[in-house]
Image 1 (cartoon, rainbow, N blue to C red):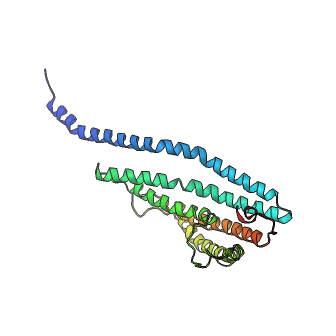
Image 2: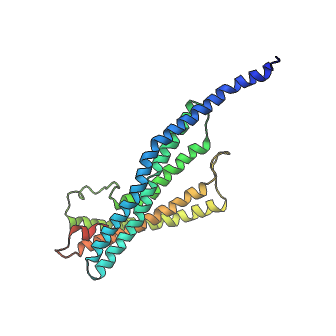
Image 3: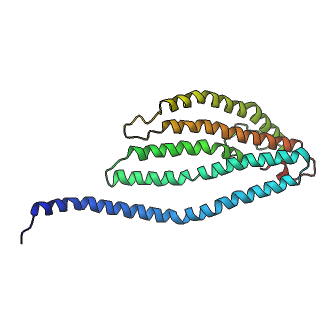
Length: 246
């Protein structure tokens, strides 16, 4: 029996690579199975929570009179938009974690690095904070520098929110949008990409998120101002939820 030892040797040399690919696929399959169940459950419950919250706000607006009902419903719609964007932007945390896990496994187990995968993590990290800014403001999750706000009365808080959103937040967002516009426009003109040859060539799309960030904060700033006005002009018999929550 004639045996081609050279071909057999080459086959043996390929075994470690095939073995590593098999292990790689098993690792990815295990991670995917680990995330599959909570992801499916969250995808089913997320839209229901958003719709239920909006219906409650709509019912609260219907119980108000005149222009207050219109303002209340307007604030609810504005916050609903930021809620949808923020809730789904939060999913980037899951994909960012998964991508970072894959990058670490590939680098330290298989000695393989991918610049595109690493840059995708930077993209998701920036987009997460930019798109989630409006939703975070709606949930009062931003850091407050006013040390008196926590212990202040509700009307005082409403005045602080109204002045803060009208005098500081909205002008800042408008100025930020104006300054970022030329930066983003120039980036689109040259189709700016990564400084790395094999990196992601979508810097111009990434920079566009700065404009979206400003718009989302403007939307929520208007909603915050409306809710503050409703609280300041609320009759004594109106419940706190009807006054301020959206």
